[in-house]
Image (cartoon, rainbow, N blue to C red; front, side):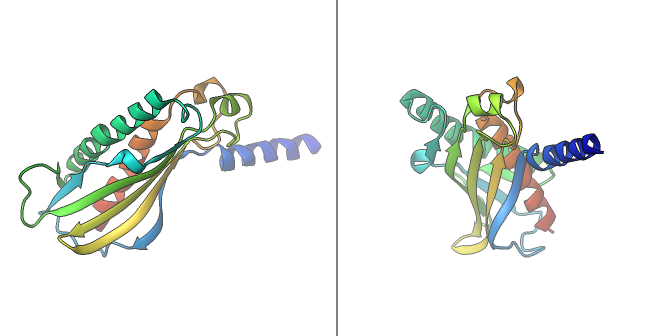
Length: 187
């Protein structure tokens, strides 16, 4: 009987702590369904990562932090625009020519916590988890349409498979969440 309870506890723990990924949270302004027609162009503004807070492994290594900022600035917006296009939406990265009816999608990465490789490898169950927080605001001209945050985490993954930088994985997770949210709410 004790073995069954122990196994049940372990499986429940894995279900709760083993989940990583991303989710929309802290919706400050919900995008009204149909507020943006699918015919409108979504202009994704490149990230200004100059104020992004870096914590965890390598946060005290200036070259690593500089590379993280470059990745955020050069990768996030183009990858999101491509994902939106793949979802059947009209999207582009902000450039010199912007359609007059464009809807802007601003991405502000407030925090990247690389967590601890040692804690993930040795303990798992959420110890040393990596985390990326992005504030997304959607507006047409000066009119705000939506504002929410996207939380991406490595969850409770442990062992050797949890080692390394999670920044690229968190970007992909966040892009999936933003794309799904916008696709759901456009008419």
